[in-house]
Length: 256
Image (cartoon, rainbow, N blue to C red; front, side, top):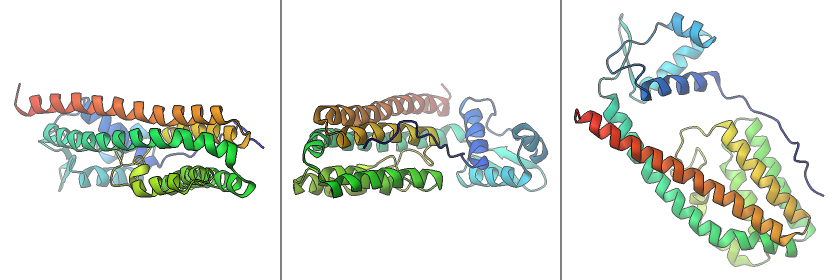
């Protein structure tokens, strides 16, 4: 039986994450310049509508990342060499995006056919395992936990349902690299994956799950192709954006 597509339970991001994201965007856009003092805790509390505890948590994280610098008795200031730092960060993340694209290319070659075979060959226990992994991903979303283990379990359960052990073996060779978007992965391109991003993945998982449970091999292949292809496109766009930002950061650091 197919799972309802009306599954919509949203997880709210931590308040401090929202503050961090907003301030990062201001720094990237040049709205707050290197060496400039940030608004006071009281002003930030009023701007974002959160408590001082939330603001302090956000500032501590930004300071740990080297983007701001607290000065005793003076306030919190933007790091002087922030352009260079953001440029280096963009270059590092760009390299990780390249790794993710390579992994997704391999997965496309393997998993499109595995989804089709799973739709034809799965038994009741294997179908249940795929559904279990789907709902475990959902549970992790609701609990604000990293979804990577459930994501990998979902794809591995599909590979297992082909009843060809080599599909499982290929995913096991990739290991944690198979899910580069997971926040716990060393190949992750995001410090914290957004809820909307994860929700998009889950909607794509639902299309795959429903096609397999309905026994529609071609629909399952197409749903997997759409899922992995969409991920591939997202990484390409991020890589292009980071390459452009890195180039502009290098120019800014050189005073051009």
